[in-house]
Amino acid sequence: MVPWPRRAAPSSLPGPGSPEAWARRATASQTEPGLLRLDVPPEQGESATVNWQDYESEGVQAIAGSATAEELDAARVQYLGRKGDLAQALRGVRDRESGMLLNGVRSRLEAAIAERREAIEREELETLYADRSFDVTLPGEEFRRGRLHLLTQIKREIEDIFLGMGYEVYEGDEVTDTWHNFDALTTDHGHPSRSPSDTFYFSDDVLLRTHTSPDQIRLMESRQPPIYAISPGRVYRRDTPDATHSPTFLQVESLVVDRGITLADLKGAVLHFFRQLFGPQREVRMRTSYFPFTEPSVEFDVTCFLCNSEGCPVCKYSGWIEMGGAGWVDPEVFRNVGYDPEVWAGFAFGLGIERIAMLRHGLPDLRLFWDNDLRVLSQF
Ligand SMILES: [Zn+2]
Image 1 (cartoon, rainbow, N blue to C red):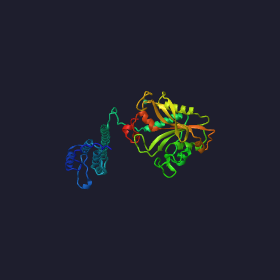
Image 2: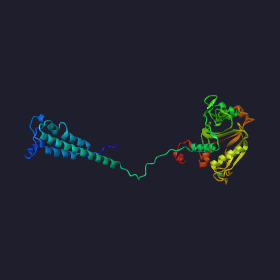
Image 3: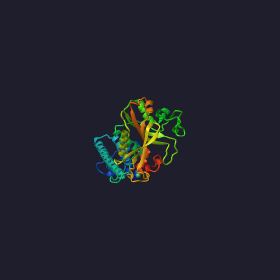
Image 4: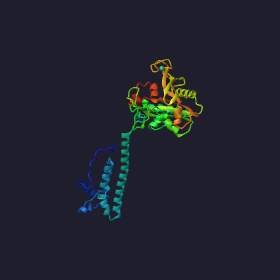
């Protein structure tokens, strides 16, 4: 709130009650024709005359000299107030002539006050506008817009690509149980990933998911094929943070279950995905590998999108970048969710979202994603 501008207090005029005013009125009323002599103020018990022409002109002067609403109100109280000379005199009027005279004075003073009040309000508004005026052509204060985190952007981009292929996005819970995270996926009881030194446990069989595969199990448990789905999300592993390790990261896994699915479908889906993500020139190759829940298993590489396979430090001068793992869903996994492996076949593949972000933007350290350093994050 900006205070209203104040001006200097008005010079004090001799009011109707001041000795000078009384004296002046007394003499003036003797000499000037057409003026009434009235006893004012009656309660003082002394006879005093007011020169109403002087009274009016003093009042008009005081009103005109009022710089603020407060000063104007003080003048109004003085010249028109209930205890003022005029109000007192009007109360004692006995004849028409003095009534007309005094009412004339009153209405002219009231008109002067109304006019001055309007002028003061206008002046105060003008001053306020002048104080607050601004140049609309000046550049405004920059409004800092938020944005999606780079990893969220890439996650959504991946979701868009798969939605375009007719897949659904299925997001499950980050807290799961050993059945969905390990057993249903046929992970051996002695597998090191089950160890508390690798996995965060809440109890013997409740844990933070170590991959998004539990979502695929839940999805298959909940319905019959065909299934074309991806499950993106945050996963947890007991790793000490460094440039390439983090106890939490984002993964996306795809799952297809249908009749007559072949490895060619897997390769076609992966190729389409990487061409959408890294450009239409990309090629994909598969190398045999091993994962507990797929048989056979492959790892897939994509041609380097940074050097166009010419060779660069990112692809270690091989022209290929390792992107993730995939494979044929193990028949035992199908049995665990109640599917007949003689009828249904399918593939799954998974990749890390941070890895895609680091490769695409040349970020050297995984921790940059979690440091909340806006100098880094606001670049994307
Ligand atoms: Zn390269």
